[in-house]
Length: 284
Image (cartoon, rainbow, N blue to C red; front, side, top):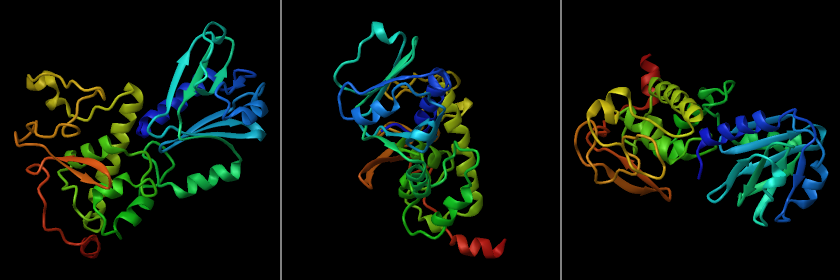
């Protein structure tokens, strides 16, 4: 499933190609979005936003197309639509005279109202890529929870947009045992995690890939082969089970947590006997 940086990148791509570019041709060759496409056909798209893994395309007073790619959704951009007719697997096509985008296989593709859009925002946690979102809202839930920090980072109601890669990598970068209860994460630790996610995910939007290693740990700096993986990007632990850690040389571990594969280095992310966050706040 795409992580939040991909959805923010898609929002930017839609703005660049379609926002305020005049009436759009809106169709649903597959047929599952036909009624809504007919309402939107000939209208102008005036906004494209992302919140976590949710994409919203705005069409004035008519509403918003709400898209969640899920595990199988794909988006493909192209040039002249007339020269590239859609196949019958395309759920949604938006087209101008010189650009088009096809959506295939999403979990969600629905026309919703402003009120329905706000309800989706309300149930999502703050997003590191939304400038106005407050990390304190997420920490309020983290600091009260006995769930592991690894599980909390994947809970979209706690923090929106973080997926399996960013979860594993940000915990490694801060030396945090993924099984640490949320209540044992102090406010300074949380602030560092949030700030790191902001920086890493912004780079993800810019480069359209996930790179999490610091400059001193790149293949060039360490004289090691670059990572070969269909996910791309240089990482510390994600999908590197049984391989040596770039830092300590120990073996990267993997385990199942909340139906997702967790990756970590037991030496670099050593469990600590932590006081509760409440106790640390009392001492501050």
